[in-house]
Length: 320
Image 1 (spheres, rainbow, N blue to C red):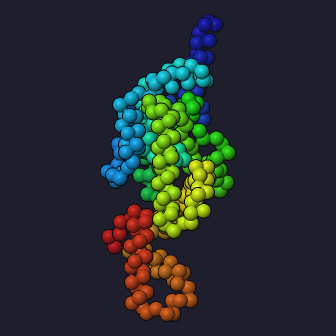
Image 2: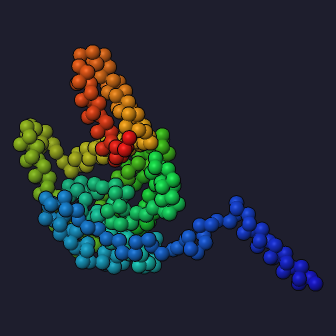
Image 3: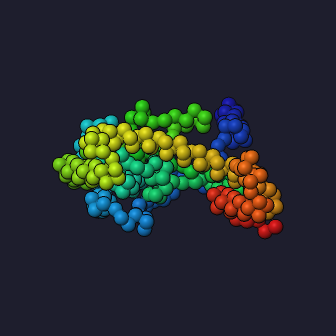
């Protein structure tokens, strides 16, 4: 009799847990959740637009594709002496190799800064994913932008930092107080990054100096004084690149905010309503100068503005 009561209690408790929506997570159902990588074979393909590239950059990308950097002497030594002792799982190895190729393509040979955001690198290497839940939200609400997950790339990036291939200290990064998250990460590769490909430090330094010489010559040709060019150094260029990266990051954030705002203004409106939005924007831009233009000039400006807004927001003109 006691055994029967215990078993019935267990059944009742299990039923309660399954029926309680606060404790039960439907995403953990086997059909909705999987530990397998969404893209089992991530890879980086150099865009066709990257035609004029330095021969050394081409060589780095080629080496990253034919060599397994995760099993290089540098990687083996880093794991043996670092925090992670075990070898990587196959999915993590593939993620690291794909991300490595992207970094080879975008590394600055003078400053060794990787001139691509981690988000864009994740997209380029096929490591980004969008959950079905986010897809459903975007289909239900055309104004909603689905959140892209780059967790797989982030984990691979963290392992590259632990192995000493990448440096990205916290004081280099920028916290966005308004939006509550870190802006695009600024990071640089180390000599170990090149060593993993079998490229010697001497050769890397030679390429760095050759590129610095080229930049100085170009500065002279552009009209910069010899005294100013003479003060150009790797540390100075690196500091300037950090400032430029921060400025670019804030400009990109501003552009994204403007795009979302204009998309909200146009989406779901008729042609006449969209044209009214563009007309009000032109009036605001012109201010008091609106009295100096004709009606036809104003119409032309509105036509240009509505075309620009549709192109900027990637919205097609409505049927009516």
